[in-house]
Amino acid sequence: MKRRQFINRAAAISALPMFSYASRWSQSAISHGPGSQNCGKIKISLNAYSFNDPLRDGSMSLDDLLGFCSGLGFDAVDLTAYYFPGYPEVPTDEYIYKLKRNAFLLGLDISGTGVRNDFTDPDKRNRENHIKLVKNWIECAAKLGAPVIRIFAGTQNPPGYSWDQIAEWMVEDILVCVEYGKKHGVMVAVQNHDDFIKNSGHVKKLMNMVDSEWFGLILDTGSYREGDPYQQIAETIHHAVNWQIKEKIFVNGMEQDTDLEKLIGIIKASCYKGYLPLETLGAGDPKEKVKSFLERFQKTLG
Image 1 (cartoon, rainbow, N blue to C red):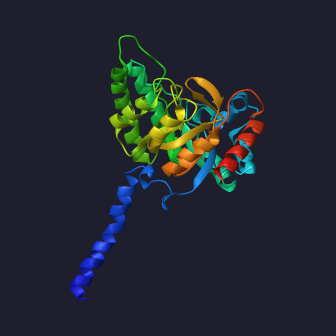
Image 2 (cartoon, one colour; image 1 turned 90 degrees about the vertical axis):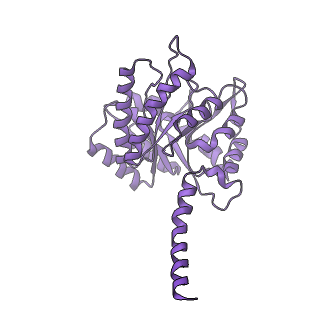
Image 3 (tube, rainbow, N blue to C red; image 1 turned 45 degrees about the vertical axis):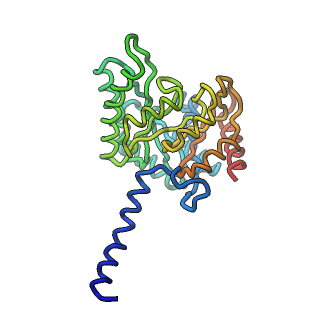
């Protein structure tokens, strides 16, 4: 091969990985298709809300939660912001970094965090305060090493406004947060929470309106309560960047045990990569409930 030909070909080859990576990054993992060799490891996390009562009454600390999750063999923990001391204020860097260090020494990733916000409020001044809340905790997420922060759409249904009208100002607020997340290397993701977002149609519409690679979905398996939840999970899984996988699911509005075999089949078929946070709710000892749910999930996952 002539020297000029060799140099030209080498230059072309060296450019390929960057182009290939950018193309893959901008698409959902589902684009690889079932059985793809690109499918990565699924990592099991625990959402801190599983211990809502003991974390709120002070009988359990976040460090206690880390120790419990490490002992059961979780890969990660999702540290919801309102269990941090002083919430909605962000704790000191000393507290954040100590918690991060403890998680690291226990072999745990921090798969995410989340705040309570409401972008359905028609009062722009109130929404600006919620934007500030999200921004503050984006900075905290970056310090923790959490790759994603969960936000809510909101719970209000103000009279005189349609779903589309509310969504318009909501998207403006979300985009401000997403740009701030991009600046700090943290993805912003909205949870379908059976509030303003009730079904897969709402999710898809909101995702199309925001249309950012730094925005995604926290896929809450227990909050599609209209029609077939498994179908809606399959329809929106390509937007998922994190999850809340619950023991119960609602089929045509009726609560029943989650069919883990069916759910995990959908997840594997989509070639989703990343964390799958579990969340247990309801009466009973949360430690026993979490342990039992984890064992069932691991057995089904294989």
